[in-house]
Amino acid sequence: MADMQLVVASKRVEPQYVEMMVPLYSYGCERKVKKTLSHLKGIYSVKVEYDQQKVTVWGICNKYDVLSTMRSKRKEARFWKPEDNVEMEDDEEEEPSPSLPCKGFNKPSLALMKARSLSWKAWKKVFARSLSF
Picture 1: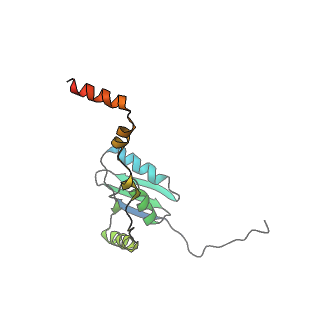
Picture 2: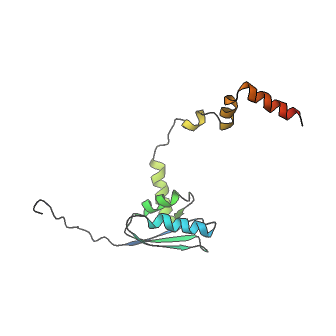
Picture 3: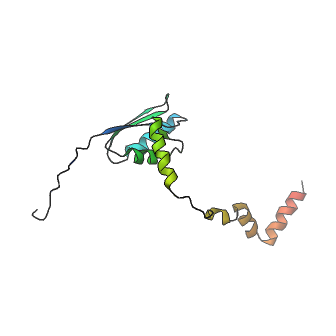
C-alpha cells in the first residue's frame, strides 16, 4: 500500500449525450446497434428510435469513438447535428490517402482458381455434358 500513489483528477468528468443519425432497415438492425454500442466502456444507456432513424447514447465517452464504432456496423452513420459532421470530415481529410493500389486486386478470381485446378478428365466430362443438351 505504501508504494501506491494517489492521483486526484483535476476535472470532473460528466456523462454526455451523443446523438447520431443511423440508417436502420429493420428491427434486427436496431438490436445490432444496441448490442454494438452497449458493449463500449463507459456507456450507460443506448436509445434507438427506429421511426426517426436516430440513436442516442448516454455515458462517459468520446463522441468520435462512438461514431467510429457505429460506422463499423453502418457506414452511413453520422452525427445528428450538422456542425459536428463538419468537424469529423475535416479530421478525415487530414489523413493521407494511400497511393499504392490495394493488394486484393492482384489476386485472381475464385472461378479462375477453380478452373485451373481441374484435371484433364474433369474438363473432358464438363464439355461432354454441355454438348449433350
